[in-house]
Length: 371
Figure 1 (tube, rainbow, N blue to C red):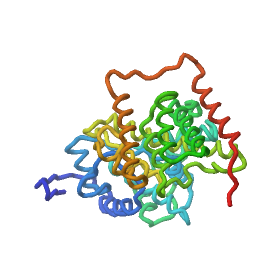
Figure 2 (figure 1 turned 180 degrees about the vertical axis):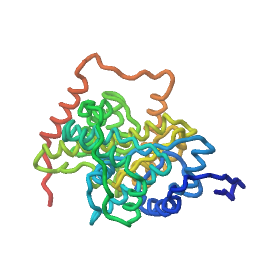
Figure 3 (figure 1 turned 45 degrees about the vertical axis):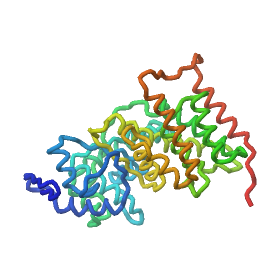
Figure 4 (figure 1 turned 30 degrees about the horizontal axis):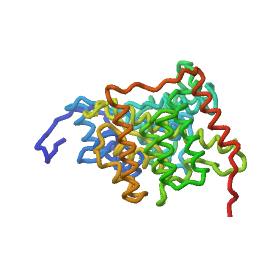
């Protein structure tokens, strides 16, 4: 490989059966699918170009970790179960991500996805699917490439599910608990007769004074409450349903989306400005990818100072966008300072009480009839 911009060349020796031509073909398919958001600035050759990964691995000595959401992991596991692609092209894309990761030694970190499954379906279901995911992740790369590149519609001779440790994946994550409380508060504020800017500022004040401030949640809520065509469809499923338990389920689902995104941001921040290791977030949900990109551009420690008001101006007036950005940035500087100490409550059941209160508000809310 050679980089003309830097007058750099590197000679790599591959095993005789290394599928280099297939890898380059697959990289073009994945680039067109646009299912990944990088937590770093991609190289000039493109996010999925193999040369960029070869350079990172052999020159920069950096590795890449892929963080897939629930739906991506599920389709990866389905490949090992013998599912055919048929009409669901997402299964083929999942095969492409697996094959790409195998060819380039990209680690896949699906832990949040399996906590989500265990939370909704129980530990047994999560352990079972984790075993099938491990089987798919260890399948022959040539067989996975055949599915990814459309030469077959089913994984050839998938192996049995792997034995996996029986950890308690259903135990609520503290990060999810916090995000669920915030999601319930967002739903509560939306039910109130307030101007959009009032909803955002009240949420920010509430997080600061009564709960805890979360940068990703604050940024995403700022988009959700925006008055100018924000990408809010499907964020809170069934929020206006007469079945208020369905609305609660929608808040729980939104909290998992927020947990996936905040975990992505946390890992990017931990990697620091050098980006070692590098992280990519994978989702078939266009809204989640948009939010992940927004968070990387505006909500990480390496984001530029003017990125957030510029991004928010797509959905807010320039004055309101800057007002929201200044408020969020001020809170982030405060909690990232050396003097800051995490807020604690003397009540041992504080989180459970906050959840119960938020659920109570959503359950008893009077939903305005449509039409």
